Image 1: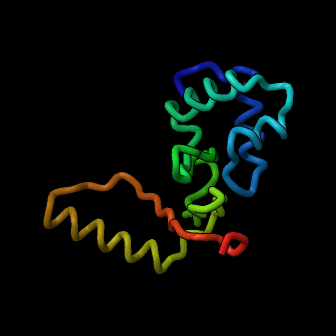
Image 2 (image 1 turned 180 degrees about the vertical axis):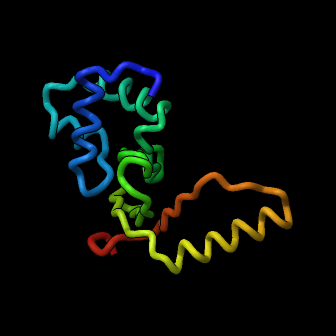
Length: 129
């Protein structure tokens, strides 16, 4: 990580590791009321820069946070543009095989080498529909 794993950073990593979906900062503060909002912002930035945490942008500048794929396992997201809810969905073999074929084709045709990918399907959730 290259940075100290302070008690607040450890608490954030543990909290995100227990969550079944990415969390917004207000949700983090409700679940860990002892953490100061400014500390949560600062530590999430540090954890994101270290590659431990991934930020999922939900539109209009809001974001949710989750552990990076290396820690949580590879998956994709359903993002509601109305309420900002984010749901994790598994990365199926068929989708991953199709993306790998596309990556090989792009490498051959354009010389682009992909390091990883994320798929966020943006739309409207069941509750907002």
